[in-house]
Image 1 (cartoon, helix red, strand yellow):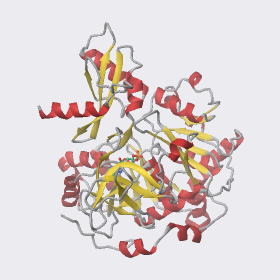
Image 2 (cartoon, protein in one colour; image 1 turned 90 degrees about the vertical axis):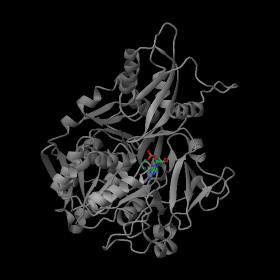
Image 3 (cartoon, helix red, strand yellow; image 1 turned 90 degrees about the horizontal axis):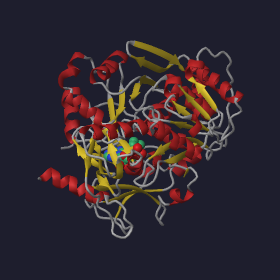
Image 4 (cartoon, protein in one colour; image 1 turned 45 degrees about the horizontal axis):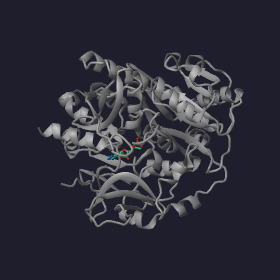
Length: 545
Ligand code: WT7
């Protein structure tokens, strides 16, 4: 059952016509600038063009709301620019931003970018090993954090870090440095670590040229207009939180909402009501939790909401139907990845939604569904979603791993996503799964290898195989199969202890929610590699029996 567009004026009104006529090469050419800086375009440019007094950010922290104009944001950023310049941070230097979801986080990311460094935002839930692993991979010297968060890091174990800037010391700064490093479009500005099914997380590097993709998708897909109050619920440590929480909205001079803390149905409805949020970008798990919270929404005025979007994991049709019926909005699914740097498959507010579909290719983007031999499959047949390279948001490389970067592309120059999908006759794309063992829990991408490595550090654990187990609310949960070392006996306490152990090493979201102890794990005969596929099958058999 398709959902028609709601009446209204949208920034992009005719998808088919735009898709036919638009291409990124011409667009990039028309907007060609030798000297660019995403941070400058996101803030300074608006102050210069007379929007200095416009509200840029509402920060909601419990009962308190603190607001900043674009002029105030520029001031805050320029104070941090001064601090960073005093430390003689070089162009291309990695600057870690490990902060809660608060304004300083956004300002620090921009300050790093403004001076030509590479901002590396880190998720606030990361614990010791997850942090050490990432920092030691990219070996940056500056870390911006809080005293509380810093206690999770053993500084002996991250020798590259020689400058730690504590948020507590960054308030009441007085000196501003209105400095801009004029970069080329290919200068790196942002790195997000992301998980694959093998190996430790890798650093996906984005270049300043991505701003065109961010800006245009903010205009067409988020449909941002001057009066919008836009709320993206993701933490800037994830690419959704940086690209669509910061860059896309501010490149479009929209007012953003930043809310401290994680999900709470009542709080979320309250934020929408209090700040009169008009555009909301969140994830299926959050929408499922809102649905599960029942009639809580009735105590709030939500009619300011005019456009709602989702990303990160499959969006169930039932949730779309629920939102339409009770909140009177359509949820627009979007598909992209850390590596793609911006929207690739989208549902636009002016177009028909087919619940269950992630939408159609963004204008300027060519996709194909390929079989194992790299040939295009007919409509309705499942294959791997591939995207014709390049496009402006596409990652520039993988940090210190050109081979890994090259491995993403086939001989015909298509980026291979690892996602299995099919496309219908109208061009709508439907998600069906992954080609590999990557886990997606609550829209967060979790590499089984990273979790397995953490598990075997526990003295009781001999071997570990980690899979995603289907779950009604989270999409998937992290499930571990382990064998125990001699002299260890399976008890409830031991299992809990192992769960907590991983939580303290990696993060709450990647710690196993379930652990099953086996006498032996299934392995390949020759190399002795643990067969996660068989563990997955076992999980399904258990469910059936
Ligand atoms: C993986 C990318 C950058 C977006 C946030 C996640 C899955 C993403 C959807 C969707 C079904 C989705 C894919 C993709 N995914 N969007 N609309 N429907 N699955 O970014 O952490 O890089 O993860 O998330 O499997 O490959 P990410």
